[in-house]
Image 1: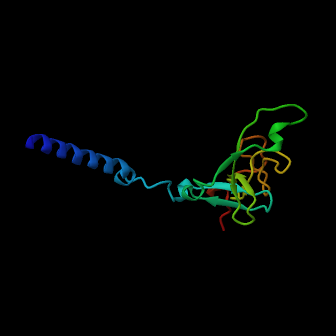
Image 2: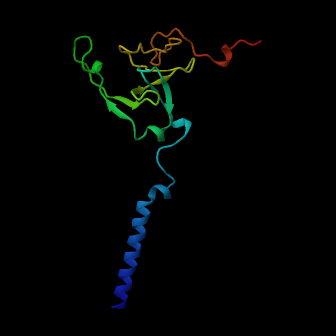
Image 3: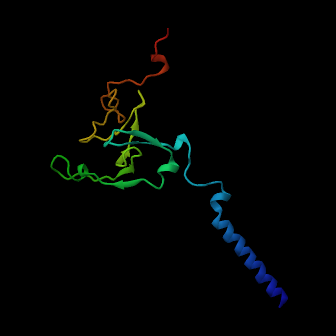
Length: 147
């Protein structure tokens, strides 16, 4: 009888330890949620106020939403493929900002999708992220003039 009670006690203790390890597995493995690094940052652009901004993963992880735009529903009088667009609230004006790109030439943040609010190119230099007929060249160390 005493050995049965001790076996049951050991099983209960082991189950409690396994349950505790399961509940705290993220901390035990060193994963504490989305990263806060510059490498995890994404670019966003608000068409309402023209604000281009960058957020690290830990700031946008719970706030990003995927929605459809009116342009997706009908384009040039015919139905088109509907694709969701990532959106987040703009920190400046509170309206919805869309996922954006950063220009390789001058660092400007802009919306790379073509539409009524965007040409799909960098507004400062004309660089296109998807490689179509860009007139701008990325600036590198070999392009800079030496005094």
